[in-house]
Image: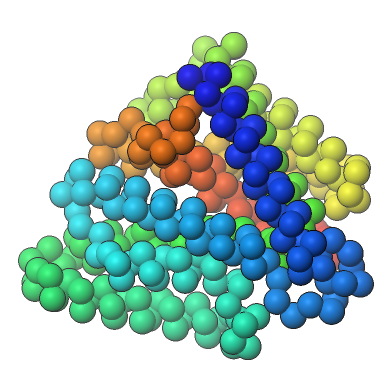
Length: 286
């Protein structure tokens, strides 16, 4: 498992890094002067987010089904993808981001109720509509901040965030495997340890300092705070997905990614870390 994890983790990191840099080259974000001339940014990353979140939504639907809950697809999936890409579309249609978000939320909610009525009438309304809306919030709203970082903050801060949060996963896995003795949340994930949390903090902080030094994104102390915050929130975000899997009596969300499990198992840590990173960048980099 460790061999597959290292191999596919490296390949995924290289692939996503390449796409983000290609994205920046295509829309001019690699150079400040070119970026200022472009009205629409992050098209390639938007497509990637849409695909990944769509697959994650399908896996979430399977977890829900294991508990006897029905996610009302395709309505919920369409709304999920539109919500996760919320930072992109206002560039195209020239509407405010707030108007777009509220409109997508309202029309998706209406569509969910219509599909529930057509499918099951009043049987399971609270459960099915509730789990469908939860998926929208958990996956769509949180994932939207990844594009928020890319469009509002920049290309290199986006890579800094992605590398920091995934290096925290590597640090947690490494330190937990080598030194793990004290359980972090035994009722949720018996494999998580405080030693792993320490490893996550060390790895994420090193990566944050490296990006800050090379690209001038943050000064030393903010970079230290960013790395530590990303590590802690990323590991707690990982635990939230573990709660879902444990409730559904599933070890992994699927077997799509060798060494990791499913798409949800890959993106779990960045979900809650993305809003933190967005707020940190927008407040500290002013």
